[in-house]
Amino acid sequence: MAVLRASELVIRGPDGNTRRIAQNSQVVYTRDTTKRAGEPVVIDGGDLPDVVLEADGTAVALRRKLSLYEKCGFPEVWVVGPDRHGQQMARRWAVRVAIHLRTRVGYVRAPRSAALPSWSAEEIQTALNEPEGFMSDGTIAALRRVGRLMRADSDLGPDDDPILPADPGELRAEPTMEDRIDALGEMFGLRGFAVSLSFTVRVAALRRPLPYLLRAAYEGRDEDDFLERIGVVREIPLVLDA
Image (tube, rainbow, N blue to C red; front, side, top):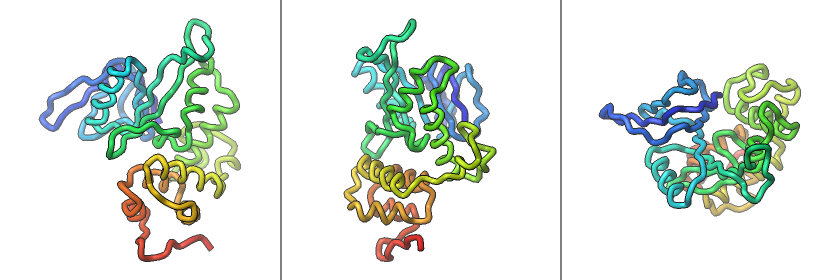
């Protein structure tokens, strides 16, 4: 995973022409990338970062920027701005975070990140407000949870955690059934899927990694499309674990 501060964020179209859409932005890639911090990040052929951090501004400016990001296809934007109602820290205000996920109807506010599964806006806000070079026990635990979920959706081993190294026993721990139901229910609600609690429980019980199910729920157009993405035909009952 790479977190980069880009001097410029540039889109290159099929005709080879480039368009600058942001300056001094921070972007997150949850996969390997050859891009380097401090340099312009040129995006070719849909090679989009998984997250863009956008400084909060006026409501009009923010709507304009989100509209531009949506047209370019950026899947997730974190809007970061000063929390004037929060505690003023040494030489700076505390920050607040709002997560915006791209859907078929535009960006919607979300309680948790899709790129960094299960990391909530509150937890991200806490992490960004901590002193430079310091991470609280709560932030470390949250990042290890995120890394465990990301690792479950890849071929990484216990020594290759994408976020933080942790005790191997902790890395092997899987989300509980209750965690799976809560996470899926939250994502279904975010996407507006009209599903029953029993449906959510049955999906949570499938032999599928939780990040895989959350990604399908996030990207699916509707309930039928979600089921197709996870390889379940509606006419066939869901097959639960024995």
